[in-house]
Length: 75
Image 1 (cartoon, rainbow, N blue to C red):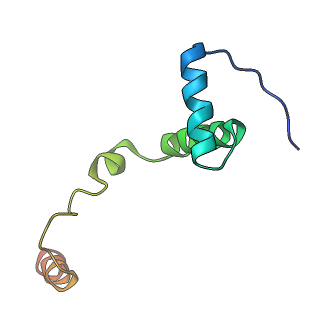
Image 2 (spheres, rainbow, N blue to C red):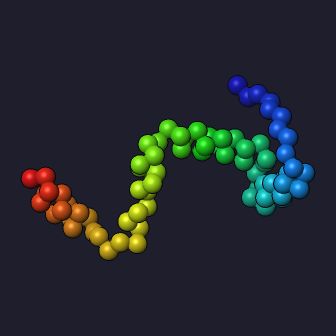
Image 3 (spheres, rainbow, N blue to C red):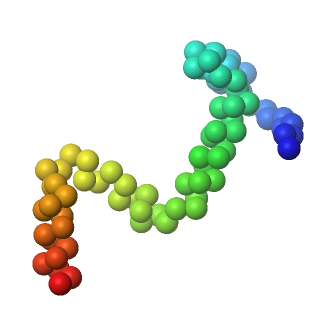
């Protein structure tokens, strides 16, 4: 079921949000809903995993090296 919500904000910010929504071919309502969903999903994750996410992006570690490390450590 859809429901209505009224939000108040700085007029200049509202103008920028409307322009952004138009540029992205979406609505302010859709942006707001996506933002709140994202906010609530982030809170459901453990803080430690959030802090570690993406930590190895720039690393040269491949899957085989990681498997070898796990075998050496735990077997």
